Image (tube, rainbow, N blue to C red; front, side, top):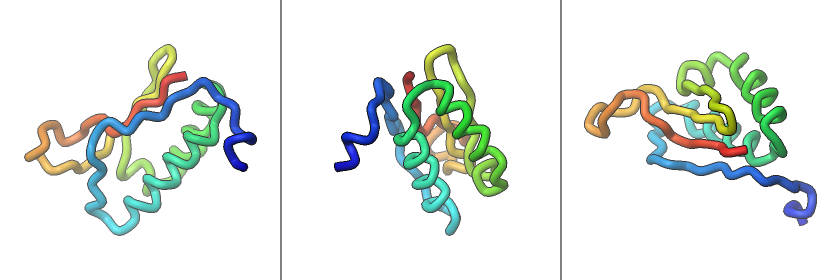
Amino acid sequence: MYNDLILTDMDVKIENLFFGWHEKLPETFIRLVNTLVLTRNGKEVREAMATLAQDKDFNDFFLYGFGRRHLWVKQKGVPTIYGNTDYRLLIVEF
């Protein structure tokens, strides 16, 4: 039913483990993923991220940036046992 509503050539790839070390992190992460899955092109991804970036919780937990044809998102505060404390959580290719 819902697949007919969303036509996209984009991929949202989760690349690493998600660490829910704060009670607000899971909700913020789900909101991020749901928002990205519903976007249809690079313009919508940029607009969606601009909206998410207005949320203090989002900024406390995540870093993001854009390449020419992709968005990357890193999770802040990952335990150092897993390497870099800010590591790439997901990438969206558009």
